[in-house]
Length: 62
Image 1: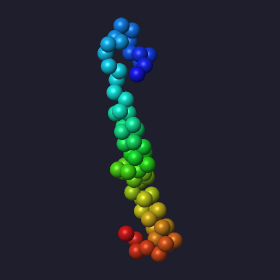
Image 2: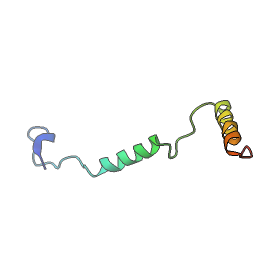
Image 3: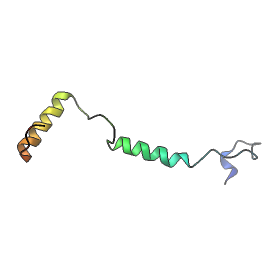
Image 4: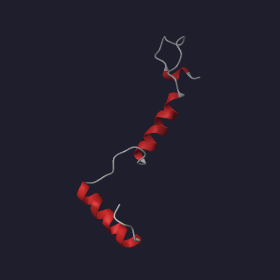
């Protein structure tokens, strides 16, 4: 561990935990990728996209 992250005179104190950072980044990247995030756009925009997809892929509108 490097003392560069500790304030001067606090070398005896442990450095901030680094193991939490990767998990936080993972959760953030999942959220940014649309994991649990609400769909973007208005209801009308989402319905229009769904109708276009139905026309292209032969869906039934659901």
